[in-house]
Amino acid sequence: MTERTSFLHRVRAVLYRQLGPYRPEHGSLSAANCLIVTVIITSLIFFTLESDPDFIFHDTWLLTLFTHAILWVFAAEFVLRLIAAGHDERYGGLAGHLRYIRDNWALVVVDLLAFLPELAFVLMGLPSPNWLRTLRVIRLLKLVRYMRGITLIFDAVRASSKELFTAVSSAVVLWYLASVVLYMAERTAQPDKFGSIPEAMWWSVVTMATVGYGEVVPETALGKTLASFLMLLALGVVSLPSAILAGSFMHQYRARNEADEADDNDGDED
Image 1: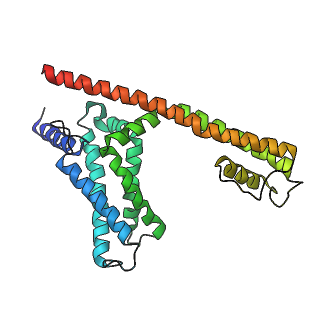
Image 2 (image 1 turned 135 degrees about the vertical axis):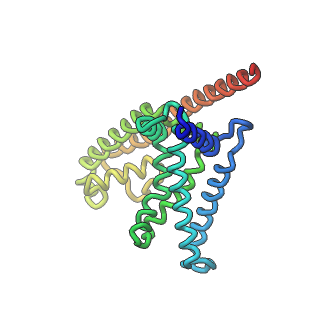
């Protein structure tokens, strides 16, 4: 190992210890991660306050400077996290970095959306439009990597993604077919309320959400039958994904506890 390679290895090791979710010594956040969390919370506080015209720093150069500084902090964090990932043998080299992005795509997307679109406008010398500023609320999701309980939920969703997709897509297909048949059944009886497939689809969504339009109800026998079917479908739309997630969550919870116990046993043996 050359001196330059050794230096880069030490830099990656330091970055890995600082930017990892937990410090290996006692499980708490590192100084760098504490700083990032503070920046995230502070930026969200200012994002909330700047919506008030009476805010003392509203539409001032000082607030603009602070906003730009936050963007650069998040940009630097993103780059340093990619560099730190190379300390893990799985993510070494260009192919390894691409593998890191693939394995952590959700957090990578959140990190990019937290700064990249708005920073692009800053670099082009253009003011950030209001709709773009609303992306700042995504920074709240950056806290996910620091909350172990929330990461457990994300792991459960990722592990059961195929089952969830099957359940949701099946419900969508049934909802669409029922809406089309409902339109065919009611368009003559109630052309003002079921005059198009989108209107029937909207009524179906409202029915499935149990909100309901009291003044809009099917009049034909087929329409009433489909309305009953949609109400039952609504129960399945909620209960089936919930059951899938609950099972996946318990599986991930047990797996994490077993991993923690194994780590504790290894530590006791050392």
